Length: 266
Image (tube, rainbow, N blue to C red; front, side):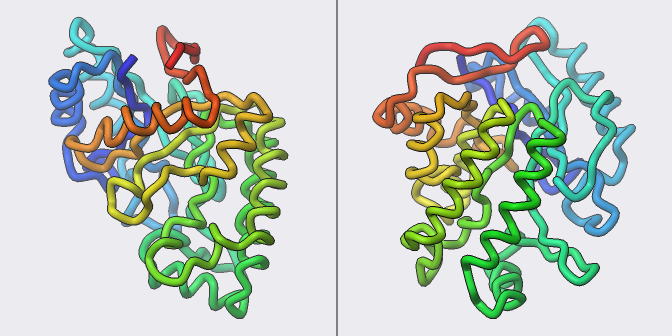
């Protein structure tokens, strides 16, 4: 079942209109496409949806227009620090993109330079940074219970772009495994996200390989996503990632169909 539910468009920081994305998905043979524009964040207006009613109206229009060609779903990617009205959407992805320190919001993943600035706030102590990232994110996950947990270890986005500070750090990995184990108790679906691979920043998806083994051991549900910001990357590295997941021991993925999440064999 070919589908993607983590999809961005020009309504936030994506490159294409929703209709262009839909036409690409149909051409690629998708059974479903879910839109997940970044929910409104009043502290960062550059990357989020600024006109939520227009976004909802357009996705609903296209859902009707292409109802005989593909399943279309209205979702949003909610940041842990800025909750949306959940009732307006068919599903939500819960993600963490910022640190809130000294009454200021600091973006973790906007660029490598921004990540370094975040690290500087902790005197370049990666373990303190990891705790500051994962602890509130897990508190959000366990209380909010989003349908999908977005790129759980986004903190590692730039770890292959210079000195490897996290993925090769045994103490960091203990922290990450501790928190993903806590997050898994929520019962939420973890996305396996190929977005950083598409951007040339990572060679493996989120979560990192050791965390995927942890999720397998915990029998946690997973869903494959491309975190696409361009119509051409809707299924980026999906076949390779499915093979990678089978090697780890996963036998099922989740998808969204007829208003509910269901599993299928891979």
